[in-house]
Image 1 (cartoon, one colour):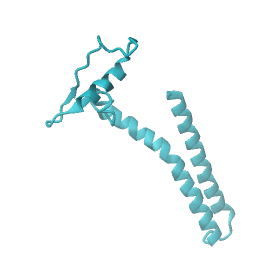
Image 2 (cartoon, helix red, strand yellow; image 1 turned 45 degrees about the vertical axis):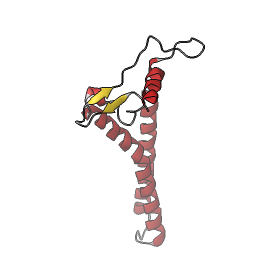
Image 3 (tube, helix red, strand yellow; image 1 turned 120 degrees about the vertical axis):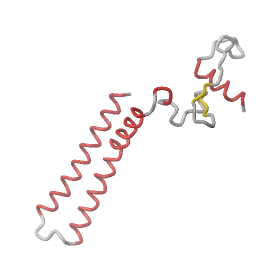
Length: 125
């Protein structure tokens, strides 16, 4: 997963640099830059470059947010109810009690711990 994310970020940065290069080429190659065609081409190329830069920016912000979060809260960024974590009024992080010994399905097969936590949280509701 990490290599896929790295590849996606590299491709997005290369595409953004390509679009910025096209805007720069339009600026350098035109005799009159302030024409309707050149301004349109430059604005479209700039917008496409910004769109491609959003993916690496979002990845960077997510990694930065994960570094700042305490160790117990790293996975609670939107999966609090699923992972069995709840917040109290004071803001402390509590885990729902999970019994792993008797977590089997109707056929007697063992249930994985993450599914057992989800089932336990759903029982509380």
